[in-house]
Image (cartoon, rainbow, N blue to C red; front, side, top):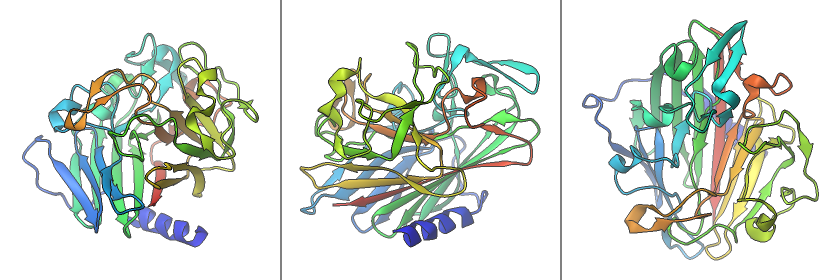
Length: 355
């Protein structure tokens, strides 16, 4: 597996940041499909979102394992961030403010007094440009974020590539270049997964293994305290595979916490998680070069009418958002998310699906 992951990493890093432009009708929003055999993934450039992923179970039966909506228009009123690329800084920034190079920045608050997933109009709510598209291979979205957008400093050139490899692997490369000012950058993919199918019920019987022995604890508003805590033997401990629902009743609402990934840095891909669903036999393996992953069990899904009229409720899906640590701009002991002019932020994810 190591050689395969290295090969995928080379492919992802070799893709250009900017490729030929695919003609689009102004800012009209469409849906684009990557397909090989019976493995299909669809995207829209509204929020550079993944809107579906269809693959077979152990008996060859196809199902869409991504929560979402039937039409692009419904994503424009989405508050769950279904399938979106979130940023400029994913997750939460406490007090919607930070200080960088002696200058204080006040951001747009959109969750109490805090900034969540980039603000009221983050990267999930803008129309990206399709720069390159090959239906059996990859699609690249780009977005130019302006100085002061949602309060963040500096112009930022952003690129996200989704790459279909073989018939069961999906690679994702996120890049961002700071042009004139230093700025924090932390992009994340906010896909909700249910390996039984998006309309199969809750994910509490999914078995998960997380390759992390620590978390960044949070306060009552889900803002990190600045501590890094060991979780062995607690309800947060998934070092050995076990069902998500096995100890969820020990938590106030469910899982919504950043895990500190063991042995991770920004240069190499390491295993993040393995997710299994027993009835279908589907398994999803995730690799990344990031230092953290937000494990979220859809705690706040509340009668959301999704695809085919199916109603998503509490724990209908789960997110595995590889990322930098939340609120790192306000915690000097956390790994820095600051990108200086001339530097490039790089975030790579690889999903491997089997049944």
